[in-house]
Amino acid sequence: MFNKVLIANRSEIALRIIRACRELGLTTVAVYSEADRDALHVRFADEDVCIGPAPPNQSYLDTRQIIAAAEVSNAGAIHPGYGFLAENADFADICESCGIVFIGPTAEQIRKMGDKVVAKELMKKAGVPVTPGSDGVVSSFNEARSIANEIGYPVMLKAVAGGGGKGMRMCRDDAELERGFHIASTEAANSFNNPDLYLEKLIISPHHVEIQIIGDTHGNYYHFGERDCSVQRRHQKLIEETPSPLMTPELRERMGEAAVRGAERVGYRGVGTIEFLVDANRDFYFMEMNTRIQVEHPVTEESYEVDLVVEQIRVAMGEKISYTPEELKPKWAVIECRVNAEDVEKSFRPTPGRITGLHIPGGPGVRVDRAVYTSYTIPPFYDSMIAKLICKGRTREQAIRRMKNALSEFIIEGLPTTIPFHQKVIEHPDFVSGNYNLDFVEKMMSVKPEAPAAKLTLQRAGEGEESKVEEKTEDKVVESAAETVAPSGDDQS
Image 1 (cartoon, helix red, strand yellow):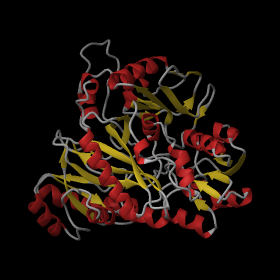
Image 2 (spheres, rainbow, N blue to C red):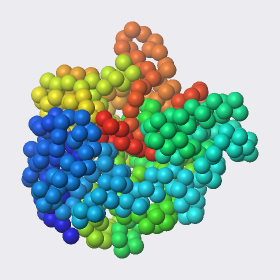
Image 3 (cartoon, rainbow, N blue to C red):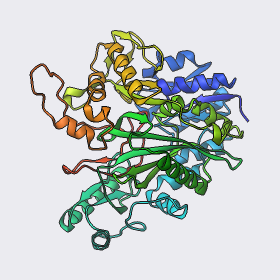
Image 4 (cartoon, one colour):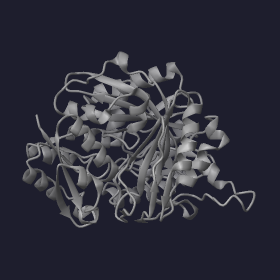
C-alpha cells in the first residue's frame, strides 16, 4: 500500500520506527522542529522536513505542517509513534481524507476508546469485567450520591474526556463527593472543554497490569501477555516488568482472553493495550484502552521475542499478523527503567540541558533505547525521557541483577537523572520480593533516610505523564485516566 513512511514524532521512538521501516524496506521521512535540528532521528532518516519552531503546538502538534510535509515528500503513510498526535482521531481522519495511511487504528476506534463511558460500555458488552459504577454520565451531585450510596464508598469521580489525572477526585463520603463533583466538573471543563463526569467504585491498592494486544484486518486478534506498571509516581510510569509478580498462568489466560474479546468487540486494527486494575484477590477490572504503541513496548518485545513496531506497520499495510498464538509464549523475565532528565531530590523537576559525558551499559540481556549522545542538549519543550533501559533474564532474579549492573554502568554527566532513584527501587526489599503495588513509590518516598550518608531523599513527585494514580489518602487508591498527550511531552503512558 505504501513504500515511504513519514514519522510524526521525535527522539527514541522516531529512531525505533526508522529501524522497523528499514527492516521492511521502506523509505523514511523525519519531521523536526527547530529545536531538534541536530537530533538523531533527523540524521538517520532517508529524508527530513522542518515543520516549525520548538513549541509542540507549532510543530509536532501542527497537523497542517505534518500533512504538508507528507505531501511534499510523497509519503504514503504516517506513523505517529506515541504521544503528540498518536491518539488524535481528527488527525487520523485528516490522514484518510488526504489518501495517507495512518499507522494505527481507525479514527472511529480512537474516538470510541477515548471516551471512557463508551469504552466501558463496549467492554461490558464484550464480557470484560468492569469496575462497578454509573452506567454513563452523572448529571448532578444528587445522582452521583445515589450511585455512591448504592455501591459504597470510597468512589472516584472521573472526567469522561479525561486524562493525566485531571477531572478526577476520590471521595470517601457524601461531603467529599459534593465538593469533588463541582471541582472535578470545573477542572474537566477547563482541561477538555467537556464538564461531564462518571463515577466508579475505587479499588484499594491494586496493581496496574496491561495486556498487549494486536488485531489485523483479516479477523485475527492475539495478545502478548502482560506488563506490570505499578511502579509509578503521580501520572508517570517509572518501571515496567513482565511477568507481573502477582501473575499466574490461569490469571494470564483469563486476562488475555478478556483483552482479546475487548479488541474483537471494537474490531481493533493495529497494536494497543487493554489496561486493568488487579486487586489482592486477583480480580481484575477494565480501566481503559490505549490505542497506540506504548513507551514500554520493548518489555513485551524482549520477553516474547517479537517486533511489535514491524507488526504494527505490516497490519497497516493490510497484511496478516505474522505470528501464531502457539508462538506467543513468554520466554524471558524483563524489566524496563525509564531514565529521565529529572532531579529526584526536587520532586522530579525536569532538568533539560547539555549532556557532557555519556556511557551506555551493555552485555548479555541489556537493551538501551535512546536518541541522545555526548554534547546533545535536551530541549525544555518536550518529554524529559533520556533513554529506556531494558534488562532480561531467564528468571526475575537474573533480570534484577542485570538491571543493577546496567544502572551502575549507565553514566550521564551534565545534568541530574532518575538513575539514583531506579537504583534505590531495584534494591528495595519490597520490589525484590515482588511485594509491591501502586502504593509503592509513595510509601518509599515518605521514608526519611536514617543517616546523612543516605543522600537521596525522595519526595512527592510533580507533574508527569499518563499513569492511573490519584493521591488523596494514606490508602492509595488508583483509577484510570486515559494516557493523553500533554502539550510538552512525547508519551503520556
